[in-house]
Image: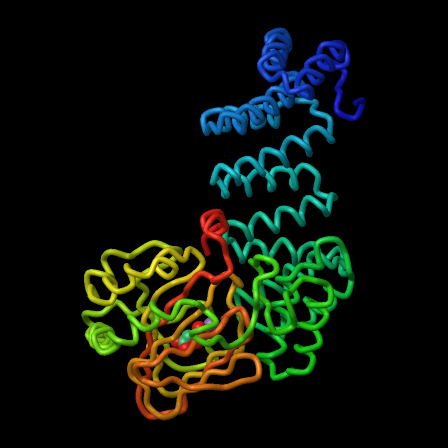
Length: 430
Ligand code: LMR
Ligand code: MN
């Protein structure tokens, strides 16, 4: 413990050790009293504050109390301002503080905490890496880039910085040419933190967008061999193991025949409501915003997302929503959406995979001209008015529309039929 004990704390080390022991034993109230009594006599004792903050943190977790969590955050924060805090204790406490701030939803505060640490220990690369990740977690992509670029200036072989910088170039700037070498060399470094599905995913995607298909395939295969993907073609990253995975599904395979029939039987009603919202003045269709398109005009009107109904949208297409409301595995699918999707001629959607293997995606054709096509893995199909096509969008799929007029479909995500009720309830929404 010498590395976390300054000269003043050394004088009361026995008391501090005792309080630490109580904390370790889970005797939280007693530990808190003991730390408090030390603090009364030694108001800037680093170890007593670190211990007190740890206790409050544990109590907060036990009692699920934000108030206690905030008290813990406050005490960690005080500690950072004290003179003569041993480096190791400073790093440990500030890291914990940043983590707790993140957990509390105070992401920007968390970034500030990490920035404080980096300024204090400018030669510690690991802290800079963590700062970069914190920036990413709160969507500060530009700042993250600066941090990782700065690391690479001094440590040009830092694989961790490379994969993260490449990731931002691909996801934030859509710049595959910058992303590819960074992701590739970063992954090949095998450094800690580089063997993550997200980096293989984005490297492959960048290669595909550059037309380097075979190299992309090889990256996906490597990712699958490492167990980062379910397979080279099924690259969702939020998965439940051992669910049946196949690119295309029949109605019978889903077990949802009666629901699919209900919607097919009513397809004209659904179509007319979808059409009524296509007016750009009065409708709410939104351009696809996940950077999936190479080109063209593709918009969606979302009625349900993450298992929640959007009442304002449903007010505009009430009959469609009344139908969906009868379909529990769709309206309650917290890892999917129900939406209209309109595609104008000229669209190309890059090959991509959805985020999760927990849903099955059904498309009901509503307005289907000649021209649009969808490939899932190695089988390409098209839509038919009034009929469903069903696929698992965690598998690679790609869409083209080379026709002369728009295509309109209703997209309905269903829970994967093999997911138990209790799993459905416990999975985090996507
Ligand atoms: C997709 O899910 O990526 C596309 O199939 C959506 C669409 O409108 O065809
Ligand atoms: Mn898709």
